[in-house]
Length: 237
Image 1 (tube, one colour):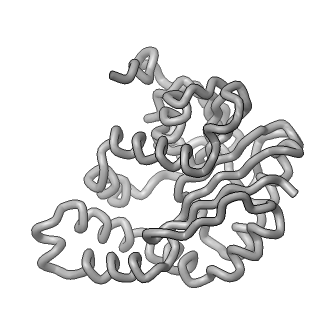
Image 2 (cartoon, rainbow, N blue to C red):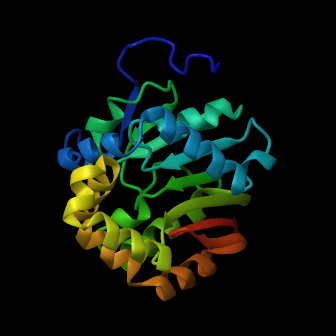
Image 3 (cartoon, one colour):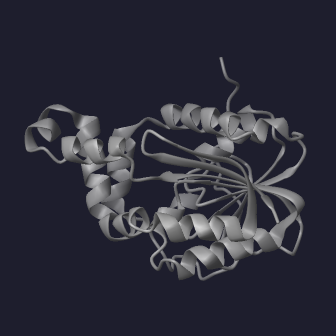
């Protein structure tokens, strides 16, 4: 049995680098996501991803920053894997206030990270880049910032949706009315897609420029596409 992931129910300590409350979360999307998978399912998924992307090969005392950290499932996954210096960044104070991980939290824009140059060992993103409003400009700015804050041997780990035949099939299935009626997880996914459709489709329709930008800033160690996901691990150039 896993040890408790929180020390108490007190409000998290948040360093605010932008105006508090300036950005909220999409309530409908968040409610659908909670139907799609439980917090424990999310944590276990993140643990598997971090293992498959090679982060577990790094020392446990490195400084790890998760962008788009939200409620903190990814930070809990890091804690369970034994990492001890974890920080999270998110644009939504609403989500950060639900984060009970005891990690250092930053209310900040990932396009302007609140860290000094070459001070971070690893940066992680679990499905946040496809929420960026403007591609390719926002993506390049985020990757530039990640590159800036990473140490010379720093690593960048990301998982994002990718338009494979499998994902096309999933889209067709979950958008079928009778499937949505009988399969709650499928309906939840359909709602999530509906509420992020503009940025989601923008991301899925620009695979070439996305790969070019990743290659511009990082030497690829893992660049794996399977089951509708891109798994990427790169080392700072």
